[in-house]
Image (cartoon, rainbow, N blue to C red; front, side, top):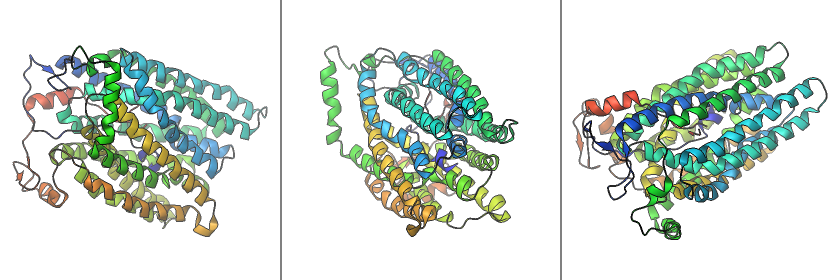
Length: 509
C-alpha cells in the first residue's frame, strides 16, 4: 500500500466558518469580482458524477499500477532498476505540467481537454495484451516485454502530464472552498473502499489464473481498460468550465498579461515555502516509496495475492480515517495536521527494519504497517492538496498547480534514482538501508512546512485543545484565532448528495 498511498494527489480546504446556503442562490467557487458562477444543482450533479468517475477510474489505475504491475514486471525478470524507473517516470513527466497548463488555459473547455489528454493514453495499454500472449507462447523474450511496458508508461505519462494541471483546476472551480476537506475526504473514502474490495480480488485472480500470472494479468488488463474508458463517460455529467471566463476579471484582460501575472509566483513567499517543503518531501518519500512492494514480493518472496491483501488493509484504514481528517482539517487547518501526522509518517520506514517471513510478520506486523500507513497517509494526501489550493491565487491557478507538480516531480525522480541505486549496494544495507535513510530525510523535509502560512489554521501547540472531547464543540482557540461551529443542515445535505475524491492515482480522470 505504501507505493500507492505515497503517490500523493492533491486538493484544498479553506476552513472558513460555515453558513447556510439559501436554495435559490448560486454557489460560487471564485471571488465576487470574477463572473464565473456555477449553480447549486450543477455543483451537486457534477460532484456526484465526479465521485462515480473516480470510483470507476480507481479500478483502472489499480491494475496499471501498484503491486499488480510491479508483480507483472517481476515475473518478467525486472529488478530494482526497472521498478525504480516505473516509479520515476510519472515524476519526471510532471515537468511537462506547466506546458500543459499553458495549452489548457488557451482552450475553452476543461472537459474536452481532459478527454483528449486522458482518453488516448488508456487505449495505449491495449498494446500489451497481444505482447503478453506472445511471451506466453515464447514468441517474444520477457525482457522485451519489460522494455515495451516501460515505453508505454513513458508515453502514457507524458500525455497525462499535459492534462493534470487542467484537471486539478477544474476540480478547484467545482468544489466550494469552505468544505473541500470534508468533500474530498468523503470522495477519497469511496475510492479507498473500491481499492479495499477490488485489489485483493484482482490479485487473487492473477495469482490463481489457470494459464499463469502473466495471462492472468493480461486478462484483468483488458477489464481495466474498459473501466478506464467508462470512467470518461461520467465526465459528460460534470459542469464544463471555460478557463477563459475563469481568468477574466474584466474585458481588457489579455493572455499575455495573465501569463505575465502568473510569473509573480516568484514573489509569493508563502507559495515558495510550500514549494520548498513539497520538493524536499517528495525527494525524501520517494527514496523508499517504490520499494516496499518490491521488498515484499522479491526480497521476502511473498505471494502477490497476500501483498494485495496488505494493500487493501491500508486502503481500509485510509477509508476509515479520511472523513476524520477531512472534518478536522476544516476545523483546525491543514498545516498543523501535516506537521503532527508527518512526524509519524517520517518514522514509519524505520518500522520496516524489523521484518521477516515468520508467521508473526506475515499475519501481524505487515498488516499493522499497512494499516498505519493507510491511516496516516490519508491525512498527508488530503491536507497537502488542500494546503496547495490555499496558498495559490485563483487567477492562473493551473500554472501554479503545474509548477507545484513539476518541482516535486523532479526531486521525487532524484529520490527514486538514489533509492534504486542504494538498494543494489549491499555495503549500505540494501533496501533496509534505503528505508532508514528515507526516515531521516523525511524528518528534515518537515522543517520548511513550519514556516508556511495558512489562513485560519490552529497553531500546532494548540492542536491538543481541539482534540480534547470537552473542547471539540463550541470552543474558540484564542491562539489560533479560529471558532468552531456545527455545520448547517443545508451544507450537510449538499455533502450527502455530492461526495468526492482525490487521486491516488489523483484524482486523475
